Structure formats: structure tokens, C-alpha cells
Length: 165
Image (cartoon, rainbow, N blue to C red):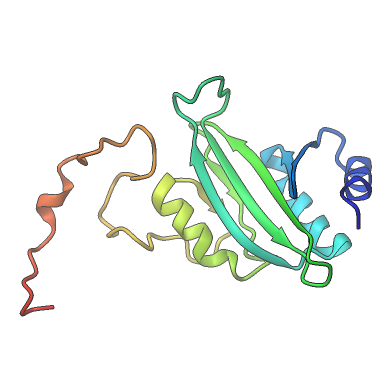
């Protein structure tokens, strides 16, 4: 399906959908309350049956940025080979999105990683807990306001020698 046809169909359903395209990189920008419905529509009606990426970026102090966090979903249609990226913006204190796990089980670990690194919650996720950092870790290391040398949390980790590993 050509991107223009996809956009026309989606804009009939979601009026305030923003789009952009650069080379073969096609992007849809949606508001956080609509993200699940847009993802579901892309999966059910437009055959984007694979979630191949789910990540976030912190735009703190980024020139001309109006929002703090961007969350990006990469979708692929395995029948046509088409890709589309769905992006949504979040600001503190409301850092919650609906989980994509009911649509794609592969969202499980990707959502956990975004939660662990950025502190973005996914409502409805079956097991949202830290995946890379220890449970007692209280910060989110990929946020731009996280200090480069940490916040003194490294002294809590036990020293492991080569013989013990």
C-alpha cells in the first residue's frame, strides 16, 4: 500500500495525525491517548503485523524541542515489506502509555527496557519491572538529567573477582 493511501485512510479515522517522510523512513506522530488505537488499526486493518522496535529518546535541552520524551514504535508488514514508525510525545509528570503487549507479545521486553532506562510506564503490561538495572536502583540512566558519573549508586555493588566469575 502506498504511504499516501495509508495516510488518507488513517486521517479519516484520526483527524489530528501528523506525518513525515524522508527517503524510505515513514513516520506517523500521534497523541498519547490515541497511540494504542493507531497501533491496533495499523495491525488489524493495514497488515503491520510485526513490532520490530520500541524505544524512547529524551529531548531535554534539545534545540527547539517542545516535549521531553519521544517514544517510537517501529512496525513492519511481513507480507509487503513496508515499514512505518509511530511516534508519540510525553512530558513529566504524566509518563504513561498503554502497553502494546496485547497486540504484539514482543513488546514485553522492549517496554521493560524503556521503563528501566527512561521511567516511562506502560499501563496494562503484564510484568513491568526492571530488566537491565537492579530492582533497588532508583534512577533512569538514559535520561539527559542523569549525571555522567552516576549518583553514588556504584558503591553498593559487590566487587566480583575473576576467580568468582
